Image (cartoon, rainbow, N blue to C red; front, side):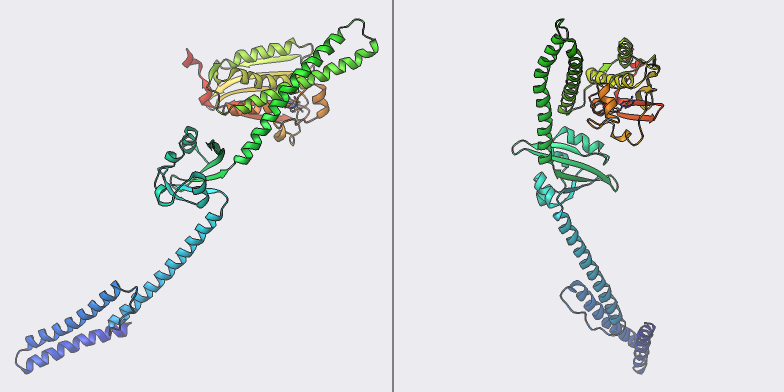
Length: 433
Ligand code: ADP
């Protein structure tokens, strides 16, 4: 490279020398120098012009052959240009492959910018949301999916749980929409068609609800006759024992059917309960009384109401959840045991715990306790008349109130079931006053 610049400098010096000597020969050295430099400049300008012309049309022109330092510049520009074209082609290939692979995905994907506007979407998303290429890019997604639940989910979506929405009634279409935040305020919307699963789930729920409903009437008749027979003074003493067992089993069936209906009703409601103020303290006091009124109950049932705060929710649902917890504690705690019920609130919300000194639960069973019909000890549960649905109801009710159930237990020592409710569900005592 240095050699070229030395050559260019030599050319300039030679031009100056030739110009000056030619000028001196005619007695006008400066004129000679000016003419020589002008010629040099003109030569350079023609190179510059040819370089500029090539740069403007380089897409379809070969590089020009310029002499000296210009050739070096052209070679370097051509190299940079080649490299850039290569990168561009590689990028285009990667982009094409990315587009092809996302188009092959069975799920819809929509990339949203920080304003919730569509930046990009794949073929499945176009199909599921009826999006169209250029028309919908830059449009706010909430203008296309006009459902309040979706708008709420989009604002509050933290990527933890998808939202299932019915987007059309004819043909019936259900979509699962999952918002995943990424980058700075950007979000990825994953869309899946869950129409089939939702229909099956609805059929399952309807079936359970209808079957439970249909079973209730014949069972009421059977229970009625059993009760009548049990009180019949002419009844043979040998039949008393089987009759008592039949009544016990009929009561169990009634309890199972009752709980199935409660669960069906809970599942049928989509929206969270609005929130009438519920005096949980008073409710717990009544539940304690109920336990003490049982013919057999643990010796000590204590109640600690540490707050006058109330809870915004559905009174019947909350009562059924808390009654289930207190009922379990009473069922599984021996006569010399202790049940402690507590209601308190703090910055994290309101909490209600039921502690017992019963048999406890093995830690491996704890995660499965809220499954329907799951029993740690089937024999013990049947003996106590349990339906196996109580904790499933508790979990469902808490979920509908934005809360959660925490279970802590040590085998042989007892268990604590704690319901946690979020602060937005708490109606502080001072605000009510
Ligand atoms: P069940 O009607 O059988 O009590 P639940 O759903 O209420 O059904 O409870 C599920 C299982 O969890 C019970 O069968 C029992 O084995 C266990 N369980 C629930 N509460 C307690 C408790 N306080 N102490 C010990 N085991 C419990």
